[in-house]
Length: 141
Image (cartoon, rainbow, N blue to C red; front, side):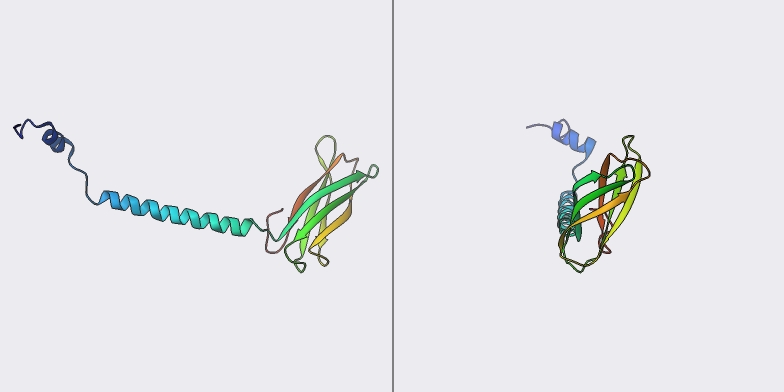
């Protein structure tokens, strides 16, 4: 038999102490709470942002001289009664914005193809559709 005074296990317990018995259940409960909160957040994000009120996509554009660009884009609304507004920007060769137009989308079908002419201060080389917003959706999509 080993002497308790020289036993290495007893020496370590005296030096470092023993684990507290309540620590592991607290860590497990905390991990479960964080996991449930994270899962709830993921469900909320997918439900809220996964199906926006309004979406838009640029179809094409045609430069119509020094001071105009004709743009075609599509707008898809979840409900045809939702009012939306879409922001178009005409950009020059030096990447500066040379024209901007906000297009209101009020009545009509839920899925629509729209055209708009953006007036420019000088020749544009491209058009950016920054997206559409609605009262329920402040972020552009």
